[in-house]
Image 1 (tube, rainbow, N blue to C red):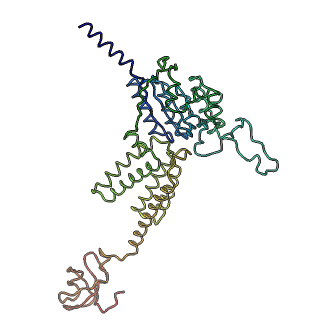
Image 2: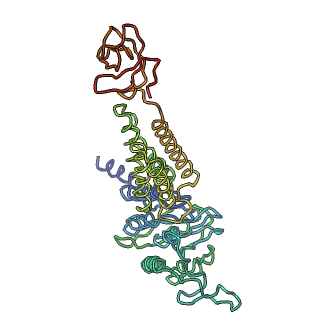
Image 3: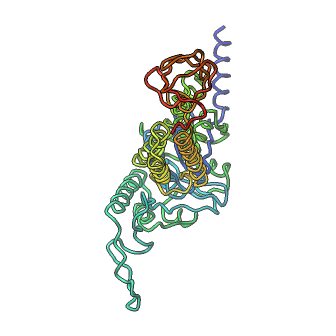
Length: 453
């Protein structure tokens, strides 16, 4: 019995030794945003729970949002699972935010025909340009004496300098922690420097160059890295690679955090509520409006929005709605459309191309809003110039029939009703009369063939 147990234990041990290392592979292609950051963080947390030996992050990115990048780096620096960031396939790049993630990774690798760098922060809200590549930060560009505009270009703004200096300090601290090239890290931020794979390896920016994933794992095998919990030697021989696929949460976040989609959701939400206020009790506008408004607000809080722009949008819609309730013959409506358009244009507080609201969408929504204002104004003008069809004023000029003979006061049937009337002359039964004036509930009438003016 003891021999059988020992044999079973030995078989289990041999089976465990025969099993290869567990390697997870996830990919990020395109701009780094809230969806990709959330996907990476959840994947890394899952890798720690599953005690994965290595997480390979294969990236090809032009950069992305600063907040999303920093969220990824925070969990990466405190991770107890080794992370190898691999810029692949050939032709891929790790620009801007991708460079920071490469520096923060435990292992940084690149395929041969790839590049890294261009990490100068995009100037928030436009403004003056950052220092030119290759130009020291305190040196002014050379001026051509023959150029009349020489000396008129203002220096970089204080905001530009603050953003650049913050980025430099951040990437330098990461480079020092990982033991990578600190000088080039600062250079890629201040001068937007770029390196191909071989030069990056020679300068100590990355750890290795690999043709493909198999070559990467072969070079990593036996490498020792420093984790938050201490040193660990990575064993990737006979590794079992598990590819991490995107899930519904990633797809949902990718969709709603598109600035144009978030903008449309916000508009549907606001106009849905306005429609519900115009037609209370239907419920459709209110339900759809609240859902879209909440989803749009959730998406916007994950994006770098300009709150002044958001406030202008809300004020603009409020002014257009007020035009419908209290017609001012265009003053509120035109002002509302102007505020709405300006707010939509400056809504996103970043110059990154992938995180701007589409101008055609802004134009379409603004046009629809303008048409709504025009329809409201037209209705107001028609209501002001239309003839009165109800009330006491509508009785002026109405024709009636005398019901009985009378000298001064009597009764007349007019507008389908019997009225008490007063006449300046006697009238006989069946005579046709015209209403000349209204005095309370009494009509003043004259014969129909007389002038009422």
